Length: 213
Image (cartoon, rainbow, N blue to C red):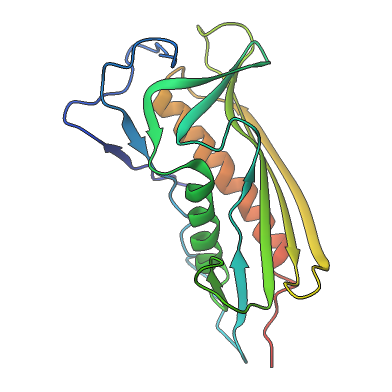
């Protein structure tokens, strides 16, 4: 899948680290940070589902994230245990808010028969989707000189808002090494893993959320 990554520069001349060098938060942040978005999955080019009967409605809750990820900073783990963050770079929103928008918009694109919204947008819904994000970071196990491993873990739970009954629960884990030891490569890689994992989540949800008469 072709991934489109949009980097927004907060102030003129904000730039990514060059030459494969990685800057950490412990180092000086004298440059204005570059801001990054996560692009939602695009609509499928073929086999588009047409709405039938009454549209199904779903509310996408704010994702639960692992400790250290509830921030706009881009996380990394050093030596397999120490949490740190990339310098001079931020997500455009806090990661939970950014992921909530990604999950909702992607679901709307891939399951067009489903009316999707956040808790503030949908007062009454047929379904509730809660996604726990256990991993969304780069991992440097042996120093900062080589490209890191990238890890994304999603645990998605589809339930009924009224009784809380779990209808579908799926866990998707994706890992791979970044294509280069650059922040841009790290962000692109995380986005691609997220896209792949969430596509699998949507495939698991699709049979449950059929048209309602």
